[in-house]
Length: 377
Image 1 (tube, rainbow, N blue to C red):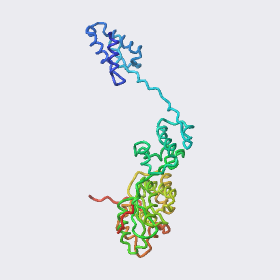
Image 2 (image 1 turned 45 degrees about the horizontal axis):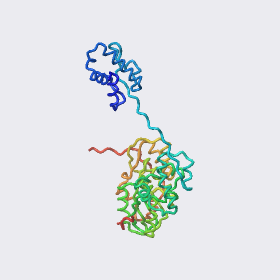
Image 3 (image 1 turned 180 degrees about the vertical axis):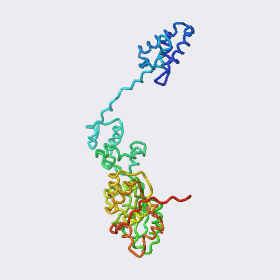
Image 4 (image 1 turned 60 degrees about the horizontal axis):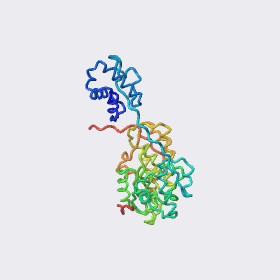
């Protein structure tokens, strides 16, 4: 074996694409004990480097910085191994799809799309009228993995209306239930997204003197609230206690308001009453000291606040634009208790949208020196 062969053997064992030429020169020296002392060593190494490049086994540096010019001929400081050849791309084999999935024969689908649709196709072929079951059950049945279809509602075939959970997968989502407490017989549900405010309101409403004025109290936030809203229907049916008023009390920040908008759309989609802001609570919250937060662009703030009635939307949008937010903790239990007084009907105090709003406190708070019947679900 000559110097080129010894270098090629070592080069083939490397895992990195860029290899120091000193390592290859050392391999040549090790393969020929006379090379290290030979006056022609530099010429032999230079010729071997060019031979590696000629064979397609290495790429030599292009810039002057990649070469050692301390003697003649110049030697490369490093060489690059050619990138590994990519395996040839194989188009998915054509599939014979049932009529319900005919769209799959007209679209350019990925291998992953075909892997998703194959078991669905077999289901529709063999059990076109299969019982509609929970989505996780169907996922385990079709793919051996209960989580395989967890986010299927976000898949482009579903969002574009081509693949339908009920018609094609014969399945239904089963979100975690909305936590709901039936505190009294009144036909309304107030959902609160913050545990502190929920606990305070549960204390107040659970001891309200006139039980006939009190309805349901629920807890939910973020994506969980949006997904779990449809489960409220089952609770209403099971307790034979329907509602005609659905209220939400969320934080006055971008996240809380965006969640409220999505939850409102979800409530409408599943046939619940319109999701209204608990305007009486918001009105009181807006009188409390806000906390600082990165400011929100005016357009984004105004868009987020559109879920609120106009007399609340304007000051809330200004609050977010000014770099301030109001969280539930700013209206603690003592203030909530004094706000909701038993000498007036309860629901209007929570829902009221007509009273004039008190001025928003725009300054930051000063820095300091140092009875339920149980969950229905």
